Image (tube, rainbow, N blue to C red; front, side):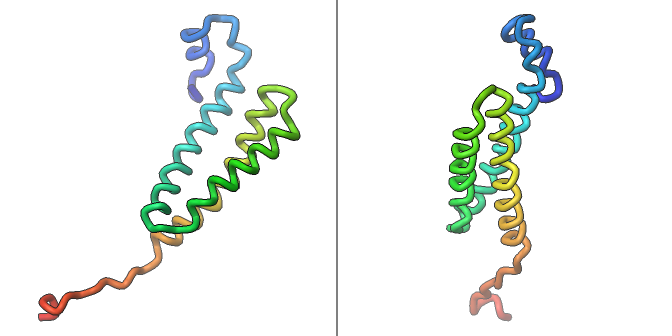
Length: 113
């Protein structure tokens, strides 16, 4: 959808929607980056991290932004992107740090040689 929005819109809905190609590209990008946030949130869940709350904060930010700017579909899409980017940045940095942090490995008595 992000690469060929005009084709997707024409195939799915007809020629009358080709003016929405930019909107479809933005929403396709938002959907793709939301998938990355989902993967990182699942990683945080596996570690029992409080970072699982970050997407909730992003959702609150998105609702607040849309509450203020909702005059058009483009404004709503821009608000979604504006809330997603800091959410993605925060959780990506936190999870990146967690993945690169050295974890002590426990050695059993039988493995000490």
